[in-house]
Length: 123
Image (cartoon, rainbow, N blue to C red):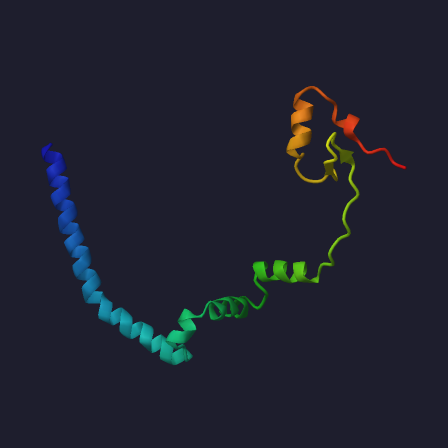
Protein backbone atom coordinates (compact mmCIF):
# COMPACT_ATOMS: atom_id res chain seq x y z
CA UNK A 1 0.00 0.00 0.00
CA UNK A 2 2.90 2.34 0.69
CA UNK A 3 3.97 2.03 -2.96
CA UNK A 4 0.57 3.26 -4.09
CA UNK A 5 0.74 6.28 -1.79
CA UNK A 6 4.27 7.07 -2.98
CA UNK A 7 3.25 6.80 -6.60
CA UNK A 8 0.21 9.03 -6.06
CA UNK A 9 2.36 11.68 -4.38
CA UNK A 10 4.83 11.48 -7.28
CA UNK A 11 1.92 11.95 -9.69
CA UNK A 12 0.79 15.05 -7.78
CA UNK A 13 4.33 16.50 -7.85
CA UNK A 14 4.66 15.82 -11.57
CA UNK A 15 1.22 17.39 -12.26
CA UNK A 16 2.32 20.52 -10.38
CA UNK A 17 5.57 20.64 -12.39
CA UNK A 18 3.65 20.20 -15.65
CA UNK A 19 1.25 23.02 -14.74
CA UNK A 20 4.18 25.30 -13.84
CA UNK A 21 5.93 24.58 -17.15
CA UNK A 22 2.69 25.11 -19.04
CA UNK A 23 2.07 28.45 -17.32
CA UNK A 24 5.65 29.58 -17.94
CA UNK A 25 5.59 28.63 -21.64
CA UNK A 26 2.05 29.93 -22.25
CA UNK A 27 2.90 33.55 -22.87
CA UNK A 28 5.87 32.65 -25.09
CA UNK A 29 3.65 30.33 -27.15
CA UNK A 30 0.95 32.98 -27.52
CA UNK A 31 3.56 35.51 -28.71
CA UNK A 32 4.91 32.98 -31.20
CA UNK A 33 1.42 32.25 -32.56
CA UNK A 34 0.56 35.96 -32.83
CA UNK A 35 3.83 36.59 -34.69
CA UNK A 36 3.04 33.83 -37.20
CA UNK A 37 -0.51 35.10 -37.61
CA UNK A 38 0.80 38.57 -38.43
CA UNK A 39 3.43 37.20 -40.80
CA UNK A 40 0.85 35.21 -42.78
CA UNK A 41 -2.03 37.66 -42.41
CA UNK A 42 -4.20 35.19 -40.49
CA UNK A 43 -7.10 36.56 -38.47
CA UNK A 44 -9.18 34.94 -35.72
CA UNK A 45 -12.03 34.75 -38.22
CA UNK A 46 -9.80 32.66 -40.51
CA UNK A 47 -9.21 30.22 -37.68
CA UNK A 48 -12.92 29.86 -36.96
CA UNK A 49 -13.99 29.32 -40.58
CA UNK A 50 -14.17 25.62 -41.58
CA UNK A 51 -13.92 26.56 -45.28
CA UNK A 52 -10.60 28.32 -44.69
CA UNK A 53 -9.12 25.19 -43.16
CA UNK A 54 -10.25 23.05 -46.11
CA UNK A 55 -8.99 25.50 -48.73
CA UNK A 56 -5.67 25.79 -46.94
CA UNK A 57 -5.28 22.01 -47.10
CA UNK A 58 -5.98 21.92 -50.83
CA UNK A 59 -3.68 24.86 -51.53
CA UNK A 60 -0.89 23.33 -49.50
CA UNK A 61 -0.80 20.05 -51.43
CA UNK A 62 -1.75 21.51 -54.81
CA UNK A 63 -4.62 19.08 -55.28
CA UNK A 64 -8.24 18.68 -54.32
CA UNK A 65 -9.00 16.91 -51.07
CA UNK A 66 -10.27 13.35 -51.46
CA UNK A 67 -13.67 14.12 -49.91
CA UNK A 68 -14.20 17.08 -52.23
CA UNK A 69 -13.35 14.97 -55.28
CA UNK A 70 -15.89 12.32 -54.28
CA UNK A 71 -18.58 14.96 -53.71
CA UNK A 72 -17.84 16.52 -57.09
CA UNK A 73 -18.06 13.14 -58.82
CA UNK A 74 -21.42 12.44 -57.18
CA UNK A 75 -22.74 15.83 -58.23
CA UNK A 76 -21.87 15.11 -61.88
CA UNK A 77 -23.42 11.64 -61.85
CA UNK A 78 -26.75 11.33 -63.62
CA UNK A 79 -29.57 9.72 -61.67
CA UNK A 80 -29.98 6.12 -62.73
CA UNK A 81 -33.24 4.69 -63.97
CA UNK A 82 -35.13 2.44 -61.57
CA UNK A 83 -34.17 -1.22 -61.85
CA UNK A 84 -36.85 -3.73 -62.77
CA UNK A 85 -37.76 -6.12 -59.95
CA UNK A 86 -36.23 -9.57 -60.18
CA UNK A 87 -38.13 -11.07 -57.25
CA UNK A 88 -41.77 -10.71 -56.19
CA UNK A 89 -43.17 -11.84 -52.84
CA UNK A 90 -46.52 -13.44 -52.08
CA UNK A 91 -47.94 -10.09 -50.88
CA UNK A 92 -46.68 -8.14 -53.90
CA UNK A 93 -43.34 -7.05 -52.39
CA UNK A 94 -40.54 -6.63 -54.91
CA UNK A 95 -36.77 -6.72 -54.83
CA UNK A 96 -34.38 -5.77 -57.62
CA UNK A 97 -31.74 -8.24 -56.51
CA UNK A 98 -29.36 -5.44 -55.51
CA UNK A 99 -28.22 -4.78 -51.97
CA UNK A 100 -29.17 -6.82 -48.95
CA UNK A 101 -31.91 -9.40 -49.27
CA UNK A 102 -35.15 -7.90 -47.87
CA UNK A 103 -36.65 -9.26 -44.66
CA UNK A 104 -39.66 -10.76 -46.38
CA UNK A 105 -37.45 -12.88 -48.65
CA UNK A 106 -34.97 -13.71 -45.89
CA UNK A 107 -37.76 -15.09 -43.71
CA UNK A 108 -39.21 -17.14 -46.58
CA UNK A 109 -35.77 -18.61 -47.41
CA UNK A 110 -35.28 -19.40 -43.71
CA UNK A 111 -38.59 -21.31 -43.78
CA UNK A 112 -37.09 -23.55 -46.48
CA UNK A 113 -38.43 -21.97 -49.65
CA UNK A 114 -36.14 -21.32 -52.59
CA UNK A 115 -35.21 -17.76 -53.53
CA UNK A 116 -35.56 -18.76 -57.18
CA UNK A 117 -39.22 -19.63 -56.66
CA UNK A 118 -39.91 -15.91 -56.20
CA UNK A 119 -38.03 -14.85 -59.36
CA UNK A 120 -40.04 -12.72 -61.76
CA UNK A 121 -40.52 -14.52 -65.06
CA UNK A 122 -39.37 -12.46 -68.08
CA UNK A 123 -42.22 -11.62 -70.42
